Length: 315
Ligand code: G3H
Ligand code: 13P
Ligand code: ZN
Image (cartoon, rainbow, N blue to C red; front, side, top):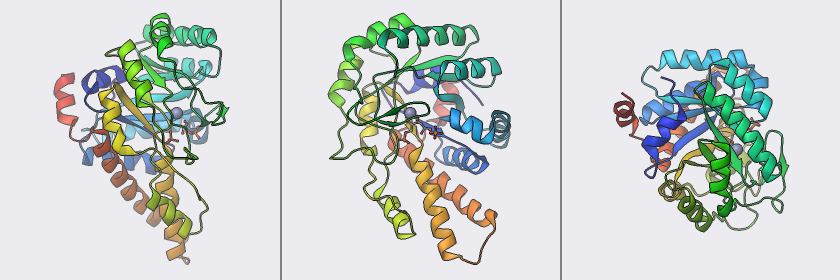
């Protein structure tokens, strides 16, 4: 069942965070749904502009609708990740998405406000909800590339003004994470002090953490042992997710970790089966491993075991 993120956030606020997982193909979608059912968690299917062009919007929509029919127990939202203004309008018009992210964080504050407000007005008119971003994460996103030194933490003093002027429903905040597999050159630093200040300014308002893959070291080692080269890859400690949730984070974005599962499974499989050239055996292993990964991640987010309570909350 497709629902809005707004409803999911109401249920989660202050208690747990909902996993927002980026998907690109059928194997990921099947693994995602299986993992969430296995762990009894609500979740967010997240689609980037890159995924929309890789698989095509019509194919992705078909795959997700099919998964909804295959797994009728599932409760999830369908969300555009890091949209520019035009892509947000496309998704709003499509009637398929339940929420969009407008990412104008690389613009000036005033431009970010103006663009985010235009998208929020258009989305609300059609019953969709909107996430915007204030501050800048490091790393490479869809249409923006930010070096570690240029990344800007969210200014807590600007948050209330931004939310009030734009009317957005949730806000991605920069508190020290970054996109990709190389998040920290030194030791990890999530700025919980900044997050606590933000929550004080907008109590009860849903916050979002991007760039939250944990880049498990055993995964990196296995990839490297099977011919990869990801030396120095490092991520967020997922034992900190529950603390973030208590401070108002209701959505945590994870893409890179799923890509690592895919890479490890395929590298190891073909190393161990050099004679094999069939996509299905390795695809089966990936779907199983991806489902296990999702279920374990939901335990860290606190969303595991919430499904029946969410269903009651929605009825
Ligand atoms: O934040 C960006 C996400 O990881 C999506 O990545 O644009 O390569 O699909 P992508
Ligand atoms: P990761 O690169 O840490 O998985 O972040 C994904 C993300 O923020 C998608 O919007
Ligand atoms: Zn992101």
